[in-house]
Amino acid sequence: MHSLELKVPPLVVLVFVAALMWFGSRATPTADSQVPARDAIALGLAAVGVGVAVAGVVSFRIAKTTVNPLKPAAASALVKSGIYQLTRNPMYLGALIVLIGWAVFLENALGFVFVPSFVLDVNRFQIGPKERALTSLFPSEFSAYCANVRRWL
Image (cartoon, rainbow, N blue to C red; front, side):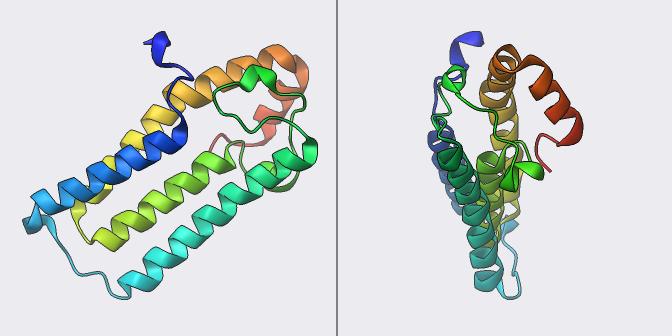
């Protein structure tokens, strides 16, 4: 499975999981539910998710380091400021929050079943390899950072 590490962009995984959620919800209308204020909740979650992800990108741009998730070894700086004081992976966390908003919007229990697949995929094929690369690039600094800031939240 190492051959899949850092090969599929997380945005592709996000879109794939979102599509699975949509198709799954259409295939199982018996799992539908009514969510009060569905649109407001879904939109609010999507906005928060996009905001968290954008904050991560902005922090990377300020530090003048790569935002390419497929090339973590190209990092020129270990970003620990801004949103990175709360989470080591704000872009993935933001995507997860967007998916949860999408599940709320779909109003189908099966939509929520697919959300963990995004977390599992990103943990295995993106975050794990990224953490190995950052440990190699910034050994003591990254280790100390990991001790103080959680992977997701």
